[in-house]
Image (cartoon, rainbow, N blue to C red):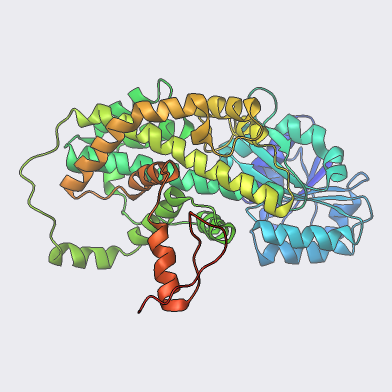
Length: 461
């Protein structure tokens, strides 16, 4: 057998079928035997194993194994059970949403046994897994060469296969984590636009669908806006109303957005749009408290809806906020690449994100070009073409935020995006006062603009 796959959840099953459809022989194994039997009954053309020993014995050498098990301790448990069966030169791939630091640890441990370990970020959901995902590969370069041909074959295609080796150890899972952070931000920006259009401007769901559909035809074309139009046009068959209107306003999360925010804090990289998106999901979870607060902290009386002309301006605000979300994510990738020695090719990240993955969008063409034109580009907002676009969108961006504040409709990610934009381009910030206050209460010292060195002042005299 060419490759073995462990873990028959939806993603694992679809990846198995993807490998098989591209001519590779696959053997599968699942901890729960019944699931293996059910899958084997549906797909007799694919081999099934019911013990790990049988699974390993059926594989060609070097053994190539793709893990699609739940991130965290289940991955460690599976690796532990496999370790005694693996041989030097075997390739073990973790395709789950593992934390990059776990991948770092596992890479080091398996290298001692001469097992090639790859941490591969897989994006595209169940449809992508079946028809072509985006694969963000990190780990052992020699091990990647043993599976490169098959991974590039099953990947989505957009200016080449959407599969790329991005660096050693945890690099692939790190890029996937940041991908998910950007995904959080963009989803939140889109949700805020929906909220403004309905609550502040007074559009019905059909009109919001039409607006999103129009936005998706041009430069704002993206997978997330596309599926937003699909969601908005879906009707509940029983009640004959848009299904989205019947869904509880309490969003869940799996933690990858939080990981992105936490790591950015560790590295000292500002990503306020992503932070705002994570916080907004946390706030949405407080449904009972929000109901109580809505009765006590009543918003200002609204005499009428905001003008419909704001719909056109909102398009610019969404476009600008999405671009800034990408800028923050790539800024973090650059910093992490230096900190962890990954040497991540940012232009290749932009390229493979153009197909298969959840955040694929037309703007990634411009982002790829920006990094190819300038390898030393510190931030996307400094690119000549993208900065021109932001300057063009800025006026309407501000008008939308003003309107939202007047209507008492929260748009934290959109607002955070503009604040980041304004803060990043500010020659002066109020941090001079922060330095002075820290020195006053904690003798932390401060720097001066007229001479080098660290200074302390007795502020009480």
